[in-house]
Length: 234
Image (tube, rainbow, N blue to C red):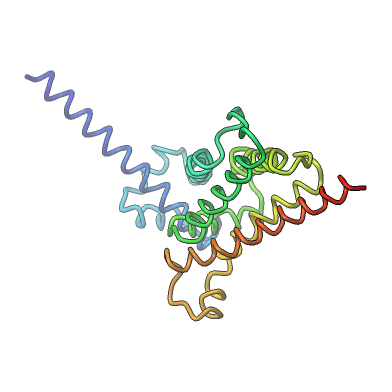
């Protein structure tokens, strides 16, 4: 009986520790994005997380370790979303150009669903924008874990969809354009709502964004097809 009681107590303690750790990461993500790393104190983070200030040193070694943990959380979150839409680097290639194009449209729709609608995306984007403005080791983690592999995977799918080389300058710029049009609806959210007369950007508004962004993708692909047709006739 004592052994069972002790095991349950350790399990509760482990669960509580995990919850505290997660709360601190979320608080850091939110406050670092809103106020900046230097503008945020460990006391503020602990208060936001409703945790003891000493738990920051216990779990992360200090404020810098907490920033790294927030970056790792972003990587894990985005990898999960991107993996569902794109597969990993070793994923089986689409069977044909039509399948690759369908995957591009699905990825774009999923991107809008997360980046534009999810409240969590707002905190992530704020954090990343600060890192892009003043790069630290946290940006290195995010770039290596999210930016580079996700962009590379989209470039590979673009090649399968169009025949254009994945690592060509044109393809890489095209993929940045695809991503950028979605990101604007998050970073320019307030301006978009005012200009559109929207009180929020929820599922209904996101559907309209999807319609436009996928229309842009459709036009880009049609332009490639037209160019390929001209070359074939010449």
